[in-house]
Image (tube, rainbow, N blue to C red; front, side, top):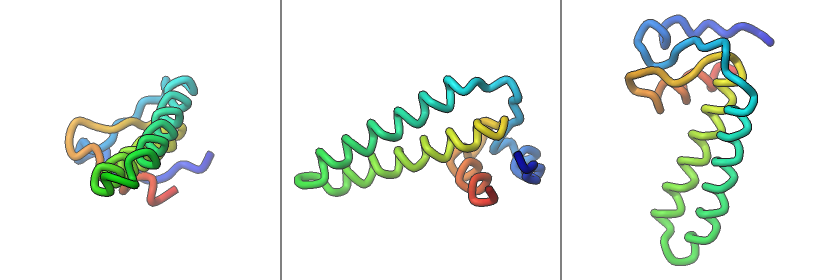
Length: 90
């Protein structure tokens, strides 16, 4: 895999290197994203804002899975921002 320069995000604590991440963690996050999308679909007819929240969570879980597949994980600060910024470079 291509090595992406994420040094700024690492220095800011938004993501962390973690080479020992297993594919089971990646798969678990992908399953979670699918469950969130199912929940969004069920809620959309009567609670669009709630459904949008599930859609955002699905996007975050999928992005987190991608990040972990590269040997990184969310950091201690501004995790959502770090994950989204990091995967935008993949």
